[in-house]
Length: 493
Image 1 (tube, rainbow, N blue to C red):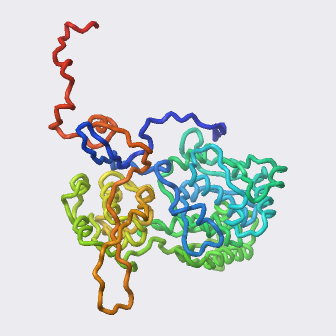
Image 2: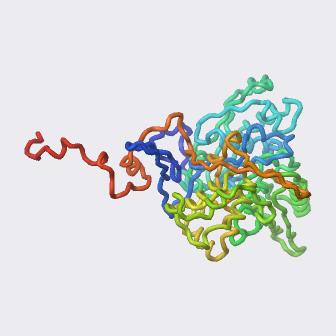
Image 3: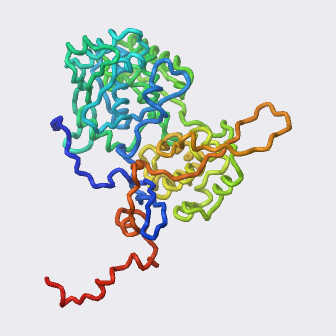
């Protein structure tokens, strides 16, 4: 028996530093010195969904449009949704599935734990590439239909096992939807069980949100999510997607009475949709193994390639000699706080290649690598113990490439106005290609930096879970003078 929680806004009674594991903070101590601390992480802890940004894009709303052929905005799809989501999509179309994932992405970007969200009709029309909003109104009405049911397999709270829930709740009435204009907004929300599952998710897959509007089959969307999750895993953990007749019925919500020739035609359509992706949306390829003629189970095997970018194909970022010395130094504060062995450190060239790929200062990349390896891993739900075990067996390079592909560097994206270009002497030698030299400024920034940084002393920093203060504390951190002069007999109990 499955118990469904009542769909109400949960009462948030969290401790103040909830979701702040791994955050870097600047503390103004009582001695007048500003010190940098990192909240401690435990090696058996994974970074959960509420601690992650949930997307990878500079401006997600501006990039999530059909006409975008230059960038690839990614949205996190938790493993519980990628592996267990089933949708009753007999009355839905491929565009309906695309709008559902666009609403999911909008909620993830703007805070999935919020009860209600709003999105403009024009944003949905631009995402689908529709010049008219009449089709958007029809899609919203179909998503609001009572037949639009989704089921998930949860393993938290009272919602354990397979649970059926509304696909998405559209709060705007049918009459209002029919009269919506391009600038108007529609209100929607997701069930509370889904919000709890996303906030507490460990593993996840990065999915290109701009790929869904280009699919012709409604069965391609769920297949693409499953394959994206598999393609983002390490090669040693990646397994192909095997679907027989029962698997297609359960995973893709197909009709149980589907004939073999219809099933083959559906698989061919799915493969054509995946192969039609081009530009930044083409992140991996898929090979399909069709069943034999005497195979009554109609088992199809989908084998995606890796979507993790190889750093060897990228030119290193040109930086100054001071940055290279800082990367190789063992005397920096982060190197002393999180020391690593030589087999756990990526090469300087690979760090510079990663800096050019994701446009993050190389020193910040190395610092985040040290934190993730020493305290808690950010790699698709693995703990630090598993992560370091794979480094010993697989080597540091594939793990570092997976780290660059999945780690949330959004809090450390530098403002481009703060990036200084190094003064280089003109090169008189003729070169076929002259890369633009630049040096990224090294700085530490809070994950959620407040408008005014509160002043904490050393003891408060230790109480909040930061690094313990040294044993030789200054005198101002000791007990007050009057406390030393009071005898126990003089205290009025």
